[in-house]
Length: 207
Image 1: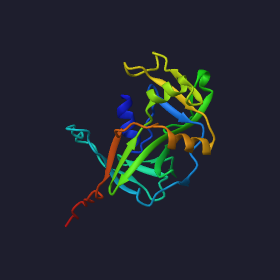
Image 2: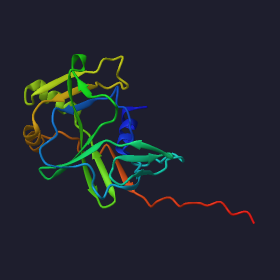
Image 3: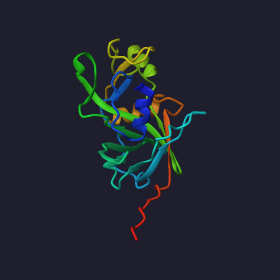
Image 4: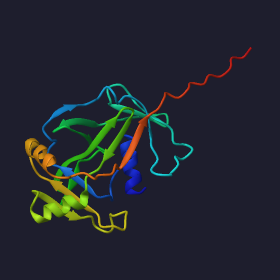
């Protein structure tokens, strides 16, 4: 699975591992209004293809259940661990893709939170990931407090340079940094749209 495909699954709120992909984690969630579920999220969603790409024939809709604590995909219910933050007029999503902590640094000693920016426009949600190259350069210049290191070649799943970044700071500092710096890509990583609930088919009764 490529990093982008894994991220698309992430956007669809599946438990997709991001090992081997560039990653930026934050020591704290930004200060702001925090909720575990937005009433607009529960329901059925499907990925919007990029450009002229077509969805595979078996690309079904996912159902986010009320309360946003679980999702049904391919007939299987999976736990969902996300937090929504409104900070400085922007919306962020904290998503935990696996069981263990999200860490960077030698020995994975600098652990933090995986954060995405999102925009909801009616029945469409766009997800933006961190600009990992910009964050890495800013840390190395000393503009940001944190840590950045390349992902070892044996762990990388792409030809381009990949990095693990850790951005240090408490909640207020992270909120101030997000307001001051262009942490996130301008183009959405992926988009999903709300779709009607699938029709329920019933078997004909025996006469």
